[in-house]
Image (cartoon, rainbow, N blue to C red):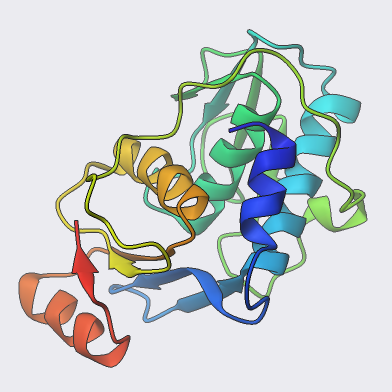
Length: 198
């Protein structure tokens, strides 16, 4: 999915509808991002990759942000719209991490949702598509209804962004619950009116 396709998917339908909801069972933090808000974060990250780091299609973005963190999801989406590969760790052309992590990063994002991000100064206009179609989006079940409210289940942290990209492209709303046991996940499922668990 290129940047134009991702933005179109995020901005389709009810713009106030959550497209990504993220829970952290350890901190109690909950983030709800509408399609418009998520599109803005993706655009800002894509612009940073393009304008500040001058990354070109085929380059590699390293993330020291845990793969099941909401910030890792939008960074992965932004990188894929620029034709970049995403890997965990620092052996990359550019590295993004969280404030306070020991790894050296070109950009350090705050872990808390309400803390000021260095990306806020970047434009929220999506840059033009770059590079080949990314291979980030995962295959979805053929019978998945569009606009489903989907709770991700047993995926690894590395699979979450790819599955989220595919689900957003299908018009779905995605819920990610970090660090939860089965009982906590079931409580989220009931509270959030989830109709599909993957």
